[in-house]
Length: 127
Image: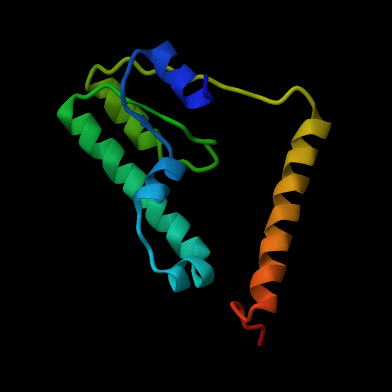
């Protein structure tokens, strides 16, 4: 069972939000994906925050995934408590520092490969 679906099962809710799920629904032009990655990520995060706000207003049960690397969600968690939501935080971690480092290395390796392909095709101009 996928981690997200397992979490849904644990929390007994049918809506599970992640920035990745929302980004798959956003249709951006190819050029936009290539040249404004950070802008796209901020837009996706904004969409997720708006979706959480709407769900809170509607009284719908939901779960969301975050690394908690930003304080953007603190307001929503406090608001949920005010609205009598049951707030549950689940923390997942890796077993070792080496595993965490190898995951980052793999992501970087993939990103460098993609960058080199785009660079060789002329998709990225270095000035």
